[in-house]
Image (tube, rainbow, N blue to C red; front, side):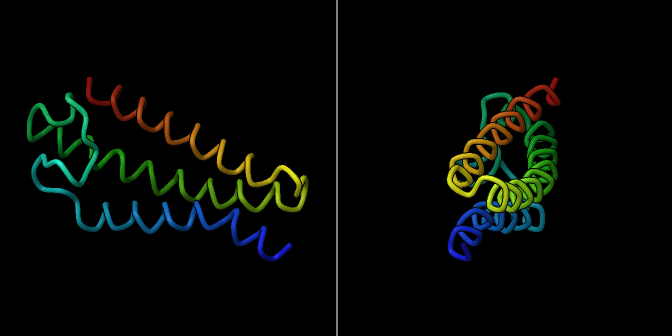
Length: 105
């Protein structure tokens, strides 16, 4: 049970670390390696900054939710907890992507 618990919360913890790093060290200019890289986000420097601030802030909230989502199913439906955790985190990431894109309007 302990291994399953650690597996399920590790995705949220990894995302939390990545989003905190992105928040602490935001990409200053559009680049090919680091940041929220879409055509609309890379169009102007102001849209780049806005997109990355929004995405990293939303990502911190998302990763917190992912940790909670990883905890609950582990104790409620252990057999399906890993697919539930991964699936819901992917859905949240997709939602954050679209919400960030919409915020660029």
